[in-house]
Length: 307
Ligand code: DON
Image (cartoon, rainbow, N blue to C red):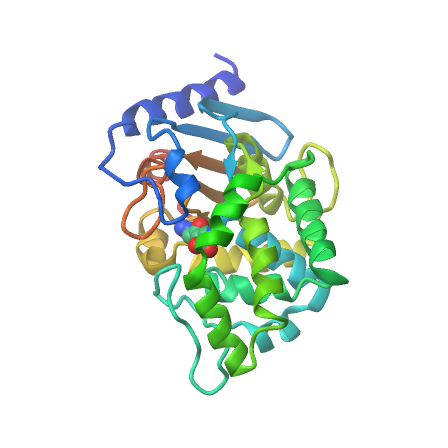
């Protein structure tokens, strides 16, 4: 069997083994997400030499949701630098849920850049003239990571905007504390659009692979973000990416990772590959039940734990 076949075979087997993992619920607090097929389950891996491997429904499009957060974090780190970004958002594994009310005492900054509060501030920091320009920068950046132009799912965007009162409440609290860089509606409109960008599991694997490859897209060869930025983003994903289970994740899986409520999860094996899983039913922390099981199995079976 060739090296390519061995990896595809491993993904296929892990997918089969994890198909019955636990029970979960498809997110429906954004009503449009509730239409996802709970049986969808995909795995994809992108290696540093530009090869892609996949198993299952790896070309089904879904919205990126919180998996966008590390990439937008990278954009702002590259533009503003770590010192300026840290004036706005801390980088602490807050142990909080993704939609927690998070304002650090004293500074009023959100503690964790991967939960909604921290990510909303980060989106507001993307340098651009006007909300449309800010979203186009984000879309261009996500597209460069994916190596192809990504579209917006207008229906999910409208659904998020119509039902996003908790995010609005977070943004108003930060605005009152002086830690939201912009007007609530403008920043949130960009954040809702950012979460509604359509990707496939194959896209997420190669986006994670770009972080694994020091910021260079392994297929197009484009240096999307500088290498030190990619390294810092991996550190943030390792400590903060899995919300209130980030510690348990680092213990059991040992890879920088990020999940989203549409069922996508990415993990990064630095200098080796990016891997992504997708399956809509979620656990209590808002991460894909089968996706978490599959990445945990891959890490344990192939000794991927970094520590
Ligand atoms: O802001 C929200 O609630 C969603 N657009 C994204 C949240 C998310 O994906 C959390 N991840 N598990």
